[in-house]
Image (cartoon, rainbow, N blue to C red; front, top):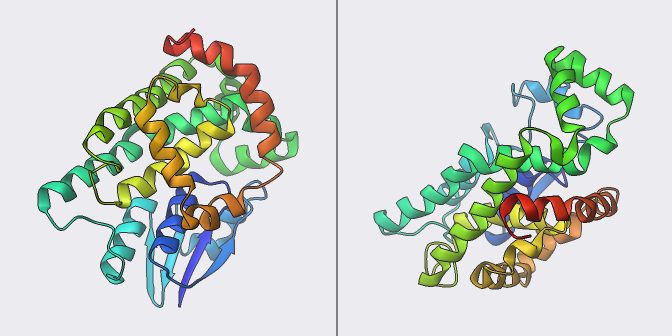
Length: 258
């Protein structure tokens, strides 16, 4: 039996859930409340010492890091393959997934926290996170509270706009990021475009029609509806919409759309 430790709104968890759905793999889902610190409980830290989600357990095999988990699933369960057979095409797929770990994931965290999520942190939550992560966390959080004036925000939002542009160029070759085949690359990017959607930043797509069409194809898949849309947390969506709309004029100016 496969067991997935995840969080409903975690972009990394979402891409593993989407991979499981695309491969039609039955699994037990164990949701962790990250605000409550479930990921720091000793029993979870024995599985994932970094205290992050997701973690996959396959009998006695424990796999962490979402990119690694998805590759493991495609290797261990070859039905419904999600990696190209051709080495060059497979390298292209991995180029896309590497961009996420290198810069897109941290940029998304900076943007999401600066615009919306810091509003959810009560003093008690901040105290607990400072206890867990050290006194430097409080100083980093103070930057996030500056919103779009966070000195790290400009580079982060520009990186996400570059992601949209890069996708638009690549999609000239076919309906999916590596061409004709739907792969782990497409799975990996679905949560990140979704996050921009939730923040009401889809104005990024106005000059990127191929990326816009890709997102529509993705959202029309039953797997997306089951693995992502059906699990969106209603406590998050109104906040992201409200704060994202407030931030949009500044975001447009930063990326040169204003």
